[in-house]
Image (cartoon, rainbow, N blue to C red; front, top):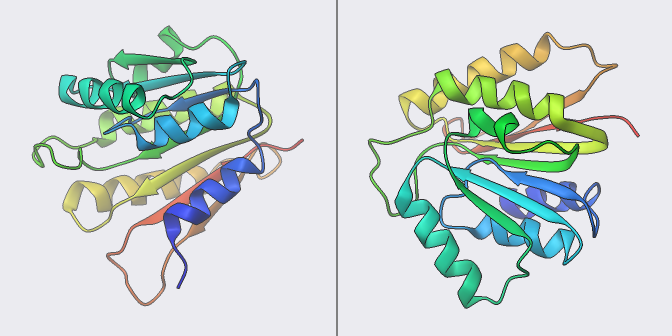
Length: 184
């Protein structure tokens, strides 16, 4: 059976190399931040965002415990403010929408900030770059976020980006992801 998270990382590594810049738009407990940090190595840079102090603390603790390269900046702010912090073109970005695993499930990503964050992320993409957006349609806001993102991406010229949705057809409430790639 396909593991969507493994597939997610497989596609990112087709674009992301040592020395690149990447963004974890929803740091959560730091697993994606760690993945990106190791992928870009000592000469790269990772910016990671979360609105919850618990996520920033959890991520900082995790990265220290696993001896992650010190190539990251943890930002306690909304991902829609990415352009206030990131000035370089990025090769990869990851969104893991929904709520903080182990945290308060009443605090979720929201359409009002997710859409501006995705628009800004697309603007920051370098050539031959990728954004992966994990969507969790099993709750009302997650379903609405996913539909909104798909509608938005369907309206962008395929000559600007290629947008692909990967989902399990016989499990409509299972998570799925969207890849947004720029041309080389």
